[in-house]
Length: 220
Ligand SMILES: C[S@@+](CC[C@H](N)C(=O)[O-])C[C@H]1O[C@@H](n2cnc3c(N)ncnc32)[C@H](O)[C@@H]1O
Image (cartoon, protein in one colour):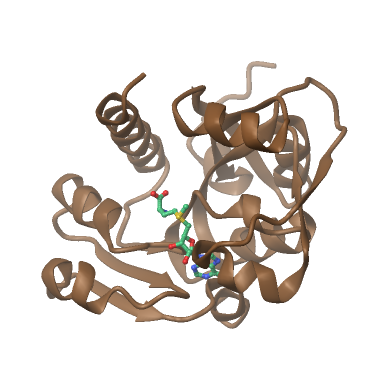
């Protein structure tokens, strides 16, 4: 799959997650916890013209996107999102965690922090260990500037299975739905480099309270 196709697929995945969230709540606020240069928030704005977006990244992208993309509804901040969200519980309708969880070792803390911060949904788009078990893989944290924040935390990262992510979501009171799965191009190159059988999965967690609130009768 070429990069354009991959990006289109991620765009559809984001749109689908937004649509699913809108079936349970209005999306007044969105927090993108690893917004990079702001590209995905600028894209999401087209689907949600009245929503207030906050994007955060440990790196500074002022001259590479933030100045261009920011407007009355999009605010960008430099900082560590995990630390920031710990102080912002129940604050956003939707929290986006795209392409960042795989830098972190403590998945319990990571998923607890983002599920506490959302009022309704979390989108977790991450590399997963491609095995249908609860087994995790520990790998040495790749050293590059993208991993700055994680590097301070640990020299190793954990690649979870989808099941592990879903188990945590369940524990924190969320139903989980697999929105998409990507197998190329980066998964393959990263997987080959790390000698790991990995894929990239997008999982939407919906707070159970909101989900059940929409159902008049439970038919199970
Ligand atoms: C692979 S990029 C993903 C960018 C974008 N979300 C996407 O999915 O295309 C990872 C980004 O996470 C940022 N990052 C890593 N740890 C972070 C943290 N604790 N808080 C905010 N940003 C972080 C990096 O600086 C980098 O821009």
